[in-house]
Image (cartoon, rainbow, N blue to C red; front, side, top):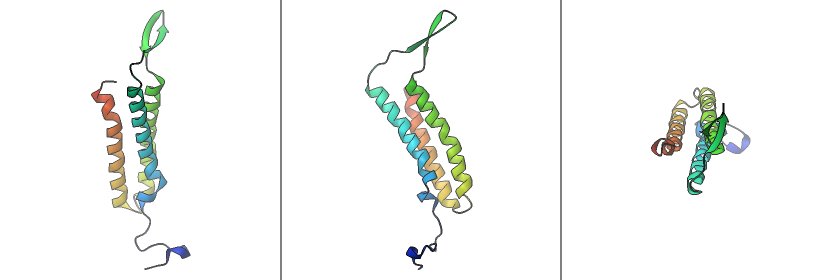
Length: 116
């Protein structure tokens, strides 16, 4: 076994699971879920009204826009993670991308189930 303190690589090589780029999309999914939980816990909300051509219509809230941004911005980060790590650690990369996909589904399920 090689000594890690000398800056030498371990026998197994680098792990994609320890990469910051692997965990950022998971944190974003968690933040999106926290937004939904907070929105639902604070009770009923009046819709924002937008007037277009004299007609008032409900508009999405800031929470909805932030949730959409968090969910959308995960996709290029997951792609970058996959491209960066797939050659170094294919099995770990595929596993982490599957975990990231499950996190996205888990964050999106309340929106679809509650028809928000």
